[in-house]
Image (cartoon, rainbow, N blue to C red; front, side, top):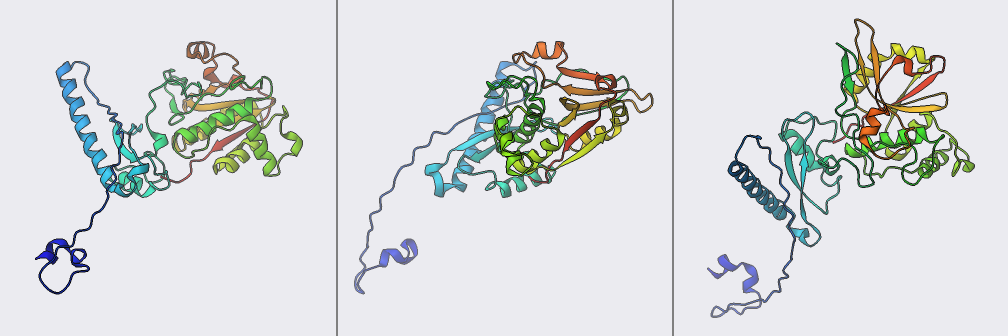
Amino acid sequence: MLLQTSGNAALENNFSHSVVIHCQRRKFRCVSLNIPLDVIVVDHELNSTNVTYKLLQSAIDQQLVKINQCLLTNIKSLENMVPMPYHFYPDIWEFPVTLIYPSNKSENELQSVRKELHKQLLLAMDRPFLKKLNACDFSMTTPSGHLFNPHEGINTGVVGGKCAVVDGKYSYHHYMQDHMNDNGWGCAYRSLQTIISWFKYQGYTERNIPTHTEIQEALVEIGDKPQSFIGSKKWIGSQEVSFCLDHLIKVQSKIMFVSSGAEMATKGRELFYHFRDQGTPVMIGGGVLAHTILGVDFNQDTGDLKFLILDPHYTGSEDLQVILNKGWCGWKGVQFWDQTAFYNLCLPQRPFQI
């Protein structure tokens, strides 16, 4: 009976005569955890306060259950772990979902967990939706003060057109930000920063937005530029942008060559499919200027075409009203492009990962 209830350890060092209970004292250390509670509920505006309270109470109860499950799953590493709630609201959903991830697990370590969640929630298996970086951020600006998605709320550009715009979240990078005076030469650098911010906030990379110096160092590392390029005020183009995307965050790009600004009028369909299928911002360089294209709207019957442009040449503060009212972010017709200058477009491609 003693063996069945206590196991072999209780019989160690005992003699083969009358039963002797062998006791072993073990020290247990208490681990103190500060558990964060962070819930989100969806409620109808006409509901009473009492209904809202009950929804909130139910959400807290459910989150405590999930936190308990997370603690039990990671019980061997409690000293270095805090169960952290993350809210996700992909564009393909009409409701938010909260997940609990252990704080000490990296994105790579959580990949198998995400795969199973993708299957349960019927999410595509070729792009990240549930990485920590995909979590909702309810602020209007990044921690460094850059505006998120200034194009949201702008009306479509063409009557009866087919519209496709950038998918997801990005930050707006332009002249004179980050204590950097790049007025007159840094527009392509800023467009590249905007593109990399998109990949960061979609969960494809954990890399911080590169500085001008880091961009120049990357081009020197791959042998595209000489050592003297670092610290200079020399321009870069769409080809260099594609090199940096590949070298810094392992993103491949397609390059579209356009012989003149007038030819941009024929690229509406191709860009429409890019934004529909890839959803990434596009960098366009021509002459001495670079811009970021966020979408297109075209009517295939009439031929009307407009481009949603994010202009990196803006030098003011992060005033959304000024940016929209002055056209630094907005729909532009084909006449926006220099009709005689050639243009190169860098179209970043989504990596296949969860």
